[in-house]
Image (cartoon, rainbow over all chains, first blue to last red; front, side, top):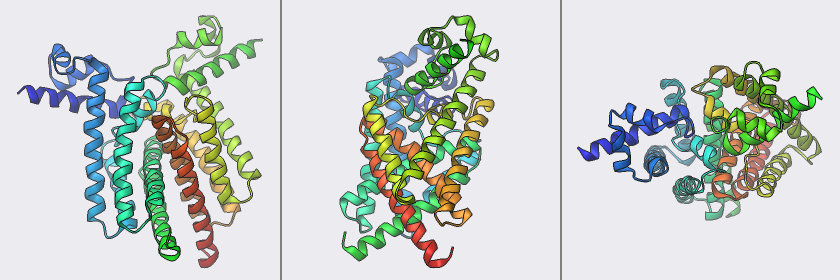
Length: 197
Length: 197
């Protein structure tokens, strides 16, 4: 039951971040949304908002990394995996009234210049995504350095397209970016097959 | 002199947004940073924080759009313009202690689900960038629909790479995304020259 309360607090915080971001989320809102007594927050997270946010970012970041793996490994090929992932993200946004589908990026932007501990946490999560993306793109046939740059680019395009799609309340920017990430991955694989680089 | 105070308030707010975002910026901080009496804020912006933010987003967004035009028009070609712009953004971040170089994206992510007026403002600014990017990419030889999707993708990659670069306190993610946006634009132009589409 103690584990349940901790999980409810993590889930409620992640949901609040998706709507309001880090600075827009208060701890009182968190315990209310989690149906937990206010004191329980400091019981599970003695370091308060920073420790709670760190746990939310790491837990949500790992879940999102695994989702990418599942979609990538189910796709016909590396290029199709891109449009599968971006199209799926567009659908999720449309079905959830355009609350943030990425659990990390808004908080990352908010804390980058103001909270060095949480900035490092977001960098760790992005690194774990970059490592997984690089690994899969190397597996598809790209040299490590090009796979690494391409993974960074795909993650960047995804994060930016979330912002545009939410601003426009339309999944179309995500779908456009997905089509072009698909074209980019195909072009990089073809170039590598031709040049041996 | 009245114009000066209004401008100082706009500039101070834009600077505070680059470090703290929208929710992390208070009006008292704004007037202190602007060296303006608190009451002057409501004199120039009777609608308070929303009206001030709307003005900051539109002013900064237009300045950034013009910067893109200047860099694009000075570049050797459309593909090089991409790396020129992303490399320049990486340098600006590195020289300014990684405070946000984009005046819009963090605020856009913060307000998307919570403030419909400001959400629309961010959509307007993104639309103005998409229009300029589409125009330049059409000028380089792409059909309108592909130029439009590519402009959305480049802006998305830029916004996302800002987040990764700030999280890592390194311009490298921006440079990686710039190299691949250059490759993508070159590949799209080549494909269009070959297929007539």
